[in-house]
Image 1 (cartoon, each protein chain N blue to C red):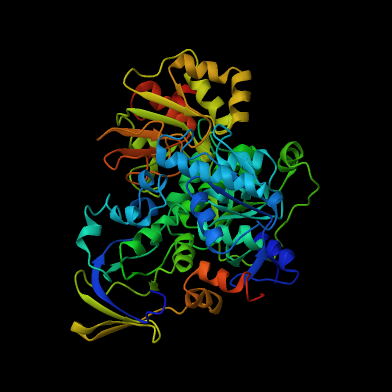
Image 2 (image 1 turned 135 degrees about the vertical axis):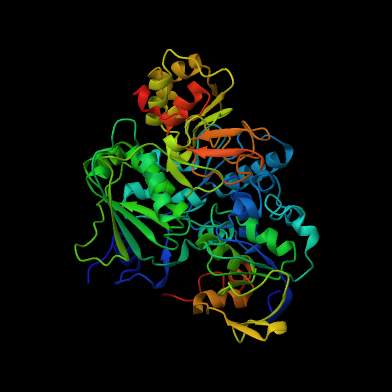
Length: 171
Length: 417
């Protein structure tokens, strides 16, 4: 996942304030570190059988404040292990944002209003653009600050710490 | 230009002038994780190549979310935590000690001007003690365990000035719910809520914790308060180290200033399934409830149990309601026991469970049945939160929960006060 610069997949649309309890219920996250098991229950309380329905690389597209609620890192992990290609949202809740960066789940901050359920997207992370080829539409992705980009480029915070053993940049 | 409390705390940690919006790497004064987040943090710490934590005196682990363990899966994760704590010689608060945030503050792990991080979103609770504290995930906390540092975007602050006396039967929880309702679930995203005003000063420290605890429900990075005589007294009993309060400058820059006048505030309720779905209690009065829950890092403290007990004294909980009480810590339990609060609750028909998170997160201790309504003093009412996506959770103050448990339906508590 870490070196992928072009992402392609189908859109599954959600609303605002999708919380981490919906993403992965506490019923599951407290009893296992098995990410595959968690992935099977992704979003099931608000979208039954979601993980079976999607194909590898498909996108979750939401409105404001995606990932609000608890600090559970199992939320971005469950999304990543369900092979979702990335999450697009107008804004992300801050802990989810950090967790997604840290575990290497692509998160894309973009105005999602114009993106429609079921359509196919092509995302160019280098050019910071989301394309809807069928409608000749392109949308600008909000850039990441340099420090966060350095974590993303390392492939997540574990890889970053393995590589440097310490925070590399002093601010 | 002056500084907010948060900008001052970061400036003193960085040793230079820091303004909101900057991304910084700051030293951590306290880092903690609980049984829902620590196992993953331990795994990640090892994957990062971690051998020793940066400072064993600045870290604590808590077993509170599923405690005692309800199944083998949880048991093995608890064992992983116990082994790690022993090997690293770090403090582990095992089952029965209580909810992480309540124990952290009671045991004096944090004091004014500190930067504290926890792998739990309600870490923001410590803001009531003039601490900058915020929740992060397991990988972040693992990196803090390893390096003693973490990156932060210094948040902009929103000042919330509260004045007016809270009427009888209206509590800090009602003010917290009102604030979440006003701001909305994402209304303060990435911001720090700085609470001040006469109303806040009139509240006990316990009641102030409730307000900072719920700051995250508006998307805020944290909630923070100035220190005063009450804070100083409280810290004298618990923190036991020297400290000085961090005050905001008069000309500090705030993203906005909100002014609340609360002398006419009424009991508030967050309806299912969003914390910001807040209405005055009288709009939902009469809705039947089958379970009532008193506890959590929001409202499981001694004062909260006492408020509920005053309503339940010499009465019986409605026969069709299960009242579950989880004192927030062993200390709370003991004090409530000694002053007779526990006896009143038991005689009223309450079911007491181990100090800890109780049924808040749906792992154990009272998972509601399909179609049931629960009234709870917790901070979240998301669908499935208590372990059943077919149940409905209403959030309220300890008084409203107690009154509702008596009547078997959502009840404005003011008639009992």
